[in-house]
Amino acid sequence: MQATSKIHDWMQMGFDRLAGEQDSWLRTIGNVPAMLPAAGAVGLGLTAGVPMGIYLTVDEAKERR
Image 1 (tube, rainbow, N blue to C red):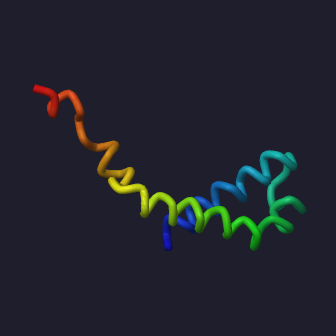
Image 2 (image 1 turned 180 degrees about the vertical axis):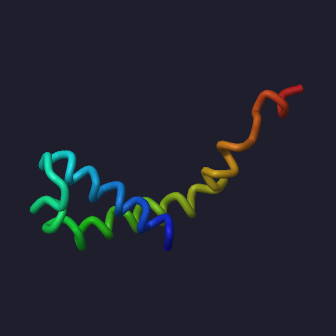
């Protein structure tokens, strides 16, 4: 659930950057609809096999011998 809210917040800040102001009308309109792609991105990330956090922390050079 926390990952979904983080992606949603990231999208909301992007709306503000697009509109050029904080708490913009674009952010207000896109607040609830932005939860759907945020939840979808987290859901796809969970079904991708290896979690991204683990993948990023593995040093592939040590694995090759």
